[in-house]
Image (cartoon, one colour):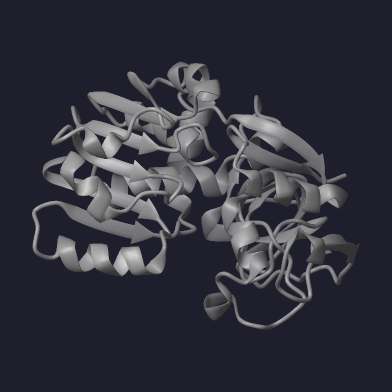
Length: 314
């Protein structure tokens, strides 16, 4: 199969487009002919070596977590789908989805709604799962809560704004650049803060929940903005800040939660229902062909994308 892969850590220049063996599904997995995938910040963080203590030194590595395509083969124990079904989800195992074929666990995939394209579906899994788990599981969002989303126009934040409203937030504040204010407002944000002009950490005791979708702040910085029993949630911040925050939160009624998204099928089922009902819509900034994944990585690293960066796999 054609795939994007790298044989050493480094800049986007280490990404290669070539041929690798097609993976074989285990009894509880399906093999998907990938029609679209995406680029998330975690992909280039892994590629750069920033997470090599977790990802190890086995090469080649195929980047990418988001899969959207058609079932090509099923494992011996799979009963939920058949060849040709349109499915999506987060790639199973250590090899990624930026390839012609990828594996999904039977317990963690969902069927693509009829009205959604492969490109739209590929923009959803990791970003939407991260947003849902941040707000619901870790942030314990309650009806009427005042919620702030830092990085509200990004691949995760754009989902989080919509989900916060769907989960009953009383007020949603989106932090973004001025060029993306209209987009974030259209997603349902009640307030928009221009991060060039306004420091949300100075909004003393305003928020019940702060979700830092871009890991640019910290618990200690955000704590003054939290109300009593407030929660600060972040996706993989700088390790030292996370540890310092955990120690401080242990002696406070304002809590910190740091996490990476789990590949949970029940969560993807809820996301799919929202997608089918029109409650949730993916925001796609650009679509790159698979062979140009290196350019897509560079664009993601620039921090200029509004919404998701999608890869088309022909």
